[in-house]
Amino acid sequence: MQANRKSPLEYTVTRSRRKTVALYIRNNSVEVRAPHFVSKREIHDWVHTKADWIEKRLKQQQQKKYERPLIQDGENLLFMGSPKKITVTEGKNQVDESGSQIIISSKKPNDHEINQALLEKWLKQEAQHYIDERCLELATCMQVQDQISMIKYRKTKTKWGHCTSTGILQFNWLIIMAPVEVIDYLLIHELSHLSHMNHSHQFWHRVASFCPDYQQHRKWLNEQGHKISL
Ligand SMILES: [Zn+2]
Image (cartoon, rainbow, N blue to C red; front, side, top):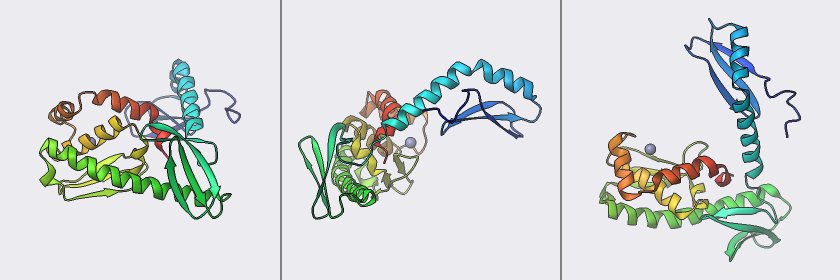
């Protein structure tokens, strides 16, 4: 799927007052950010020493793009870590989970935007229902239940969760698609911020004491997180 790229070593250079050279790979393109004092030739040679890595990252990104869920009949979608087959039928606008299927009944089954909106609304409701309860269970176990002032749900581009010093927890409702252990980790992560508003050693120690496998779950989010984005 690299039709627009003649060679893996095509790249753009952005100059700035930075001190080091760095590579950024996004949307099938390679950007080199470099200080003014580094010559074109030096950049060229440096990029070529990274050729294998660049090629590998471009392939990974393409693969991830391919694995992102599509909301249409017959496609698979993760729900609480299990793959479910999407079935779109004509009916009153509603979504139901039945065994290994998620059935989208739509007044306009061919309208992709409506189907997506119906599914998103349903996922958000499911997330709210499950996470409200689970979060309180975990908070009680961690003895921070009195510090929670509110739990909010939002679809955000870059964050799975967020916690404020005033005790407002915010979760990306897309996490309802992740395996339950990963959801638990994300809840424990934000609940641990009620004790440590940073990512210090003490913070991670607290996370680990309630979620010993947290590194595995972080890895899952890193490697599989694209499968729970819509
Ligand atoms: Zn955090």
